Image (cartoon, rainbow, N blue to C red):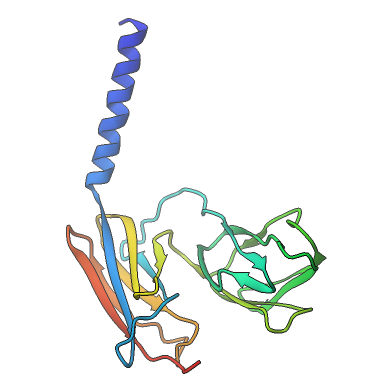
Length: 204
């Protein structure tokens, strides 16, 4: 077989493999509202396979910025084991820290980007602050799954590329009245998978 034919054959094989994987994956549309029926922004929804099967890929990293004496975004989600970078884009120094059991750490006073990201190797909630600016706060939820999303201003979230399986679908928000009692639904992937949650939230 000539070189061009081998290249074409390889491309066709790759395309067919991709289509096969895509055919076995689906999306999950989630709507989150509060006890008054208002849409909830920045709720984290995540799906844990009932089978326990997870991809072997390394958890994706993430970035939490410091801009105008605020953490951006306020709420983040990552898979357990992810490495998170904390760039300081202000013209003043920040001292980022957390006393949360899931990850205790401190990035002493610095500008720019720290030399190394912080690896979050335990599941759970990490609440972060700045030792210099008490009004700065951020929430990072570490989950044992790569299938997660965050709701927009309309309370909508989409979890894409879910392999065919049954899942425990859970939701969390930093203003939940009972943060340790996560609302949970059992769902299965399909061509039109969707779920709705109503959360009891504290007033801001």
